[in-house]
Amino acid sequence: MISKLPIPKPLVLVVDDSPATLEVLQRNLTAVGCRVLTADGVPGALEILRDSDVDLVITDLKMPGQSGMDLVRHVRENHGNTEVMIITGYPSISGAVEAVKEGAENYLPKPFTDDELIAAVCDSLAKLEKRREQEAAPPPIDTGGLIGQSPAMQRVFATIAKSARANATVLISGESGTGKELVARAIHYNSQRSTGAFVPINCAGIPENLLESELFGHVRGAFTGALQSRAGFFQVADGGTLFLDEIGDLTPVIQIKLLRVLQDKKVVLVGDTKERQIDVRILAATNKDLPALVAKGVFREDLYFRLNVITIAVPPLRERDKDLLLLLDYFAAKYAKEMGCPKPRFTKRAIGALSQYYWPGNVRELENAVQRVVVMSGPEIDAPDLPVEMRHSAARESGLSRTLAEVEADHIRRVLQHLEGNKTHAAEVLGIDRKTLREKIKRFGLDS
Image (cartoon, rainbow, N blue to C red; front, side, top):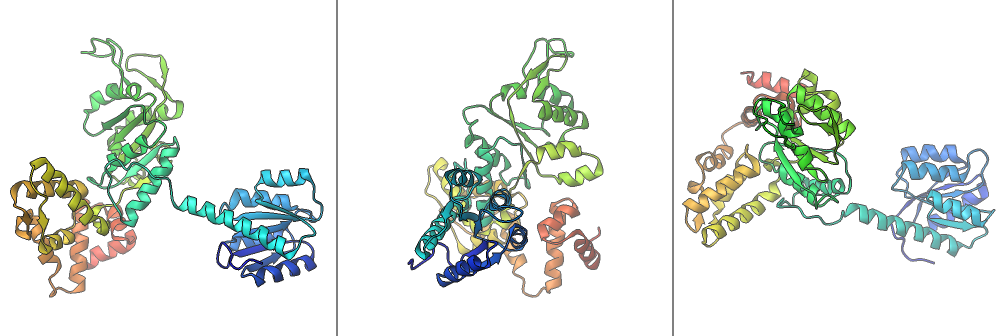
């Protein structure tokens, strides 16, 4: 008899139309430390599965009405974190093969001894535990310059790993300076398209009258100045990845053309009528609230859904407390090496001021600040060496004479200022709903 189960106190659901069998299995499994639920048929089992997180289902194969095989299929389609074991008094090779194909990990013919039952249960639970460990620990990836140990960044890394294995469109959201392009590059260079081109485009940085030609290409004579045919970014990225940054700034005309490309996987050069097949993965990024733009009619809803297959929300630096010192050390070492000088040391006062700062420019702002102080300061960097807005942040935040309401009002005011009055985004940053935010704005007199 075993001394320890692979999973402590597993929840096991036993399904059999025989009351005697249910009693025996419940008694034996409880004796070794399992928590046991029972059902006399598939309908009762489905109700239990709907309401409980079951680790292992042990089901009879032959039952009146729906069979154990029907239950196996249901579990595999709807409860991926649950193992299944078949027991039957009608053993056959064909039955065993079908059970395994449908997803049953173990097939135990009757009659069986107590030891055989427990051994089969342990084997099923061990497979479940191994699968859970593999799913919890995604394969290592090349983060491409992204740095972070905070839980928020670990979630980003896990999603990057999963996205890299797929070919779906990804929408990367986050404030300016959070590293959205680095996320896109990490997805590309960890994917099967890594040998293809990664083509980044800033949709807001190309004049509207040129963007269509730049994206899709043009033929000779398509417009004044088109002296020869030219491939667009979609053709350049063929076989690779096209990264569309600031996707929220696309004009309605370009939105329609992009939607067609995503639907048909074909492009038409400006001035041409011939469709050209392309194989390009689209990664898009925005620092805007796309659902709000959709609601205003500024951004097409169908395009939004096409882009938003997989979503990665890159957290702002102020939500990455554990990463500030890590990034500070990395950038200090980087720019000290460029300058050919020893890496400077930050005093407690400097670190305190940086920790209290709101970081509206996020990681990009931090990098620029570190580069400046490495160039302008000596081997030790103190609070007075920091940019003026940072050196005063600690004193402002640590004023113990202010009331809680004053602190709250000041924080809400600064969030709204940074987000240019976008209440939907501000509510997300503050972790409250829009109604609560409106009430606080009114209470603190922040309407202006």
